[in-house]
Length: 111
Image (cartoon, rainbow, N blue to C red; front, side):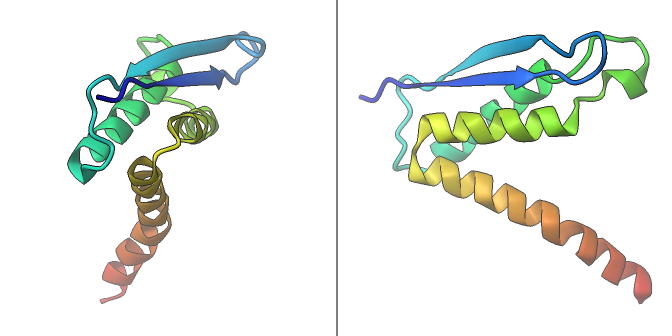
């Protein structure tokens, strides 16, 4: 049985929070990192946790959105900390989807 934890640290941007570092732990106890579905689930928990710590508590939906750079850094660091091939693969698929999705959407508009 594997017991590992992925720590997520995020430096929040913005003037009021410029020096704040928030951390969270994604518990991976009992995860079979050789199982793609379980590794994908861990990656999903990492991104959800990063979204939580990179969001500002505000009733204004624009301000409450997670900071994209904070999330990018937090997720990348957590994936490096986990250091498991299938979690890294999920991260790389997500990054590739982020690059290709806008082009597919634009191609659909040309038709």
